[in-house]
Image 1 (cartoon, rainbow, N blue to C red):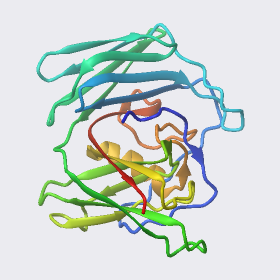
Image 2 (cartoon, helix red, strand yellow):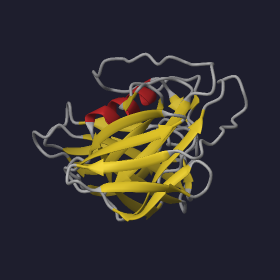
Image 3 (cartoon, one colour):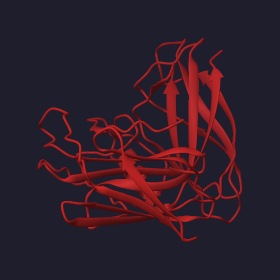
Length: 265
């Protein structure tokens, strides 16, 4: 399932997370016309997409001008060069491409005479074992459900994960990132706790599990701990650490994906 590309909005309620990762403060930018790069290369064969636009001030309405006419390409360590072509304004794609586990992918974007670069490595894929729904004990609604994902973390690899959650094909706005600092080599049950969309019996729930590299984990974790909410895309009006130089908003992520869909009982 492809990741929708929208802007994350800042939530007024901070999400509490049980992790000893360093707290990373996010700068909230109220200026505009900064380049935004949103790029994903996955291990699933199909169309890969790089989106380019410019941001607007956080205080403005969410209208984000597309960046057209750019030169966009991705290189891998095997000498392959993938030239992305612009279809819809600001949307650059290449069909029938699949990233390889362990492969390092380097993005190059040239626009208005300036080149921006990023690099990301596809980690080993970790299997999503199961997705289950349980009664949400933190809700006053006795019929409301929560979603828990199950996977077995490989020992000694230093794995990082990002999860997307869809309820009846609508993406939940919360960011879900996890690593194996306290679960290395163990079976893991990870709650996708969120208050955006209520889940009840009969609902269709889909979870996408991404195995991401350390830089991308830091990006998603930063958003999660600062309480950002918005469709996972995910660019914010802030400036979390990313892997793009020179510095712009957005990210470039090479990762594995796998999905499971259940009907809530």
